[in-house]
Picture 1: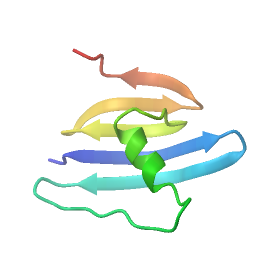
Picture 2 (picture 1 turned 135 degrees about the vertical axis):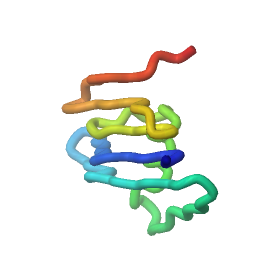
Picture 3 (picture 1 turned 90 degrees about the vertical axis):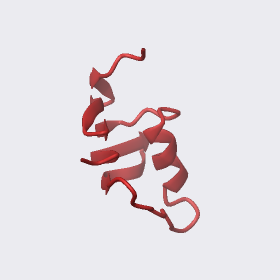
Picture 4 (picture 1 turned 30 degrees about the vertical axis):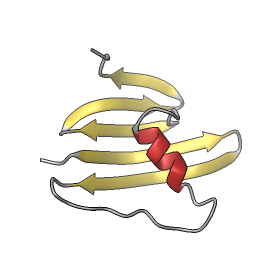
Length: 82
């Protein structure tokens, strides 16, 4: 069981592709560090996980349940907030 799992997450700002086909799995008890140069998309990726940014396409799973699925900048499936 994974805590966070992403499949093919992409994010565009107009013609600028900030995130391209990002896949990540974080298992329970695992500590993950995201590093890279300024402008590499680290903050955009984290903001996308907590829905402060809308991804352009891809899937986000929380506790192995589909949280969000977007394709071509349109939501295909999303867990409704409680």
